[in-house]
Length: 329
Figure 1: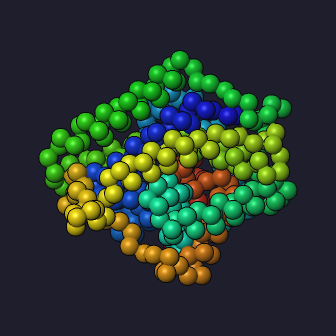
Figure 2: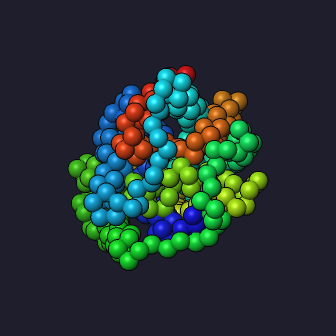
Figure 3: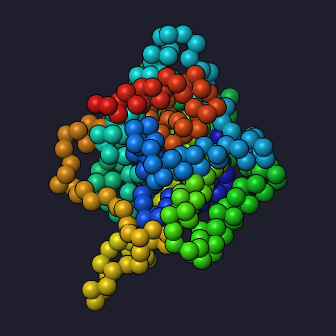
């Protein structure tokens, strides 16, 4: 169902987590590379973020458990486990060769006006849209129990209080507390965890962690009754503020009169992607398309997959096994 308030507040948390990591730690919030880094090259630059993202489940579970998605059942046979692993392989191979996923390209890349991210997003979004609607006759897209999925539903008072409180705490932390912290490795690592926590909460509250809502967003192409427009608000309240902040502060760019933008709040330098459109090759396009197929089949990308793994370990074992295998090719 359409959740305008939940998704808008969740998108603001996604903005806080991703922009906070950029402006305070000087790094891009690309979950696919962070996840692969945790597996193959763990460091203080990736482990705290993934740990924080998973930790987002804790306050939601205790204070607003209704915000945790109702996932499909876990694999109950070797056939279903193999199919789940296959989708995980597409996720891993696709995000490795496409150099990112919905977080790195769509949320962070578009807000940084990266031409490569515009191209990657166009490829994987189009592929996911076609896959969701035309593979298996669109049967993967859920209905809403006889009610049009575009009918809005609103949070309870307790849910609204929790979500509003999370957004305010994130804003206070990012805009008032962190700028007054002494620059050091310890503070940078601590904020990496906080940024991951903010992002994890954003995925859960916005509905990005709910595969049914993601697939419902793709339904506008063939079945309007199953169309859930919630995720369009990610563009407005997630990408929009990030784009405004990037244009205003111009991180890592040269400014007028030979000046450069200020260094990150907690880090010594910027760590931004340097590849250009000239670096795009067939593997980049094929990787973005492969990720789009996986996203369109199951409505899951790496960030939500991490959260679902914590809640459904059997599903996670198959998906993450395939994901890591895909990263090896």
